[in-house]
Image (cartoon, rainbow, N blue to C red; front, top):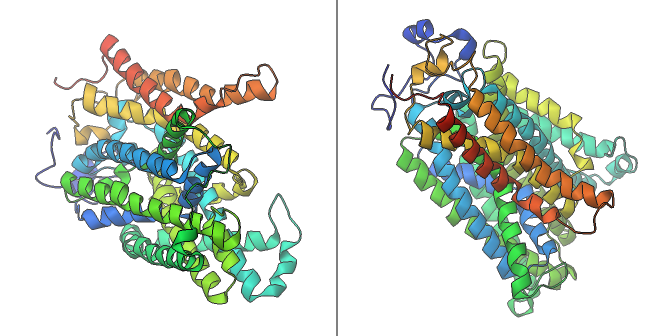
Length: 504
């Protein structure tokens, strides 16, 4: 069995061939989990992926919420750019193993966690995707709700009462978005690629038009960039806050960053993926951030208050064309990010649990149904909730990232035997102990518990009035805490009791 240490000279098959059928255990593979044969995505496809991921209401609101920390506009912009540069580096790290082998995130984890143990990170990532799917769908549904109220005023009667925190009109808008996203997803990966190839640029056009309109309305000389909503901070006091903002940016992208291998596997080459990442993250995000800051700044002289939600900005313009164009654009943007970040990930993750029972499509639909049950509209409605949520999600994702990177780059030294990823033979390289690598399991616990505690305990101590010292800022670094501890714990455990063997 050949080891993959560089991009394969002959790409693996898209679907299992007869030889693959006989060699791969059916309980570990299906057409979606098997190595891809045609790696055809170029740099633009990767750029379009990130455009779809970045250009969303959630991204805009998260960026806008940084003003509530007391930062000036230039400090918010600095935090956004530094944060995205960190994301770019980490995305390249997680992309390579999947691009080289042609397998998705849950399958490449078998080389670290074991062929059965890989379900641990897969299920955790899948559950997180369910939460984010609900959040993004809810945020986009608010655009649709505004359209209903503008063009069908009588629908306002459906918005007067609530059930479980959401009005009947809200449920209707959520359902429309839910079905639309499922329809795009159901058509398969190539249809998704074609959708995101134009969705991201389309959103840019509308955001540019919105920014130009507001600036022309206000007059450039009337736009100020000191938009701090909180207490104004001096330079020294702003440094730790900026560091927290940078950490929050990383936490926001931690989900798609972790399972970026689900997309990198389709890349023509690792160089093409890296180029797409550079264009889609630092370059694209810089422009997006500038638009965000300029647009938010222009809302002050135009509307007399700072508005950091693009939906509310469009609503305040109060013209039928603006509401229709803006609303539909943000709906398209959210469909794009939800599919690439929160549909495809659980599709692979849950399919990995039982490949023969759960198809790729079934895995995605599990996430879609679960998102409704979480009622995201009840807990994602203010900046404090956003930061708290990002901290908790980062705490869960960080350890998985650190362990995967440690396993692939440090312990395995980039050696992966693809065939052994699909066998339950006790002589298989990734069988470890009954299909689990105990070192990876222990590293997950040793790093995950402190990371989650860094989010929960400081807030709990204040809520219970057990201390007057506010340590909640620690939660902003939960991803880094989990990632660093996961990396160190796994390396230490493998050094002490090696499970991953490169040469036999």
